[in-house]
Image 1: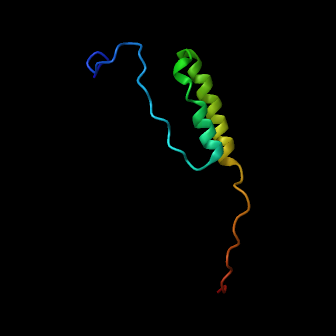
Image 2 (image 1 turned 60 degrees about the vertical axis):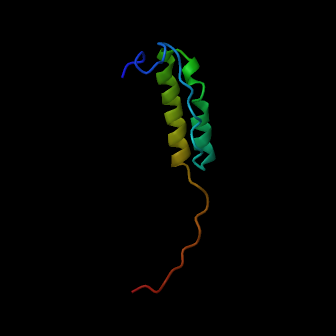
Image 3 (image 1 turned 90 degrees about the vertical axis):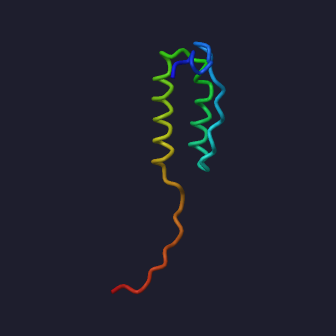
Length: 76
């Protein structure tokens, strides 16, 4: 369906609902940083996405903190 068929004027941006929270603060921060993407020229989008991707990888590769102790049952 083209923009004309959908009743959207070319060049107009549709409002986008905010992304749901993930429960991971660093990930939510990266996602929130993409909110202003529509105001940037398209040729800057790749750099923004590459930066966001690097931040997400760092956030998700980082240790999440101490792990709860596991119960060591009988071996054997």
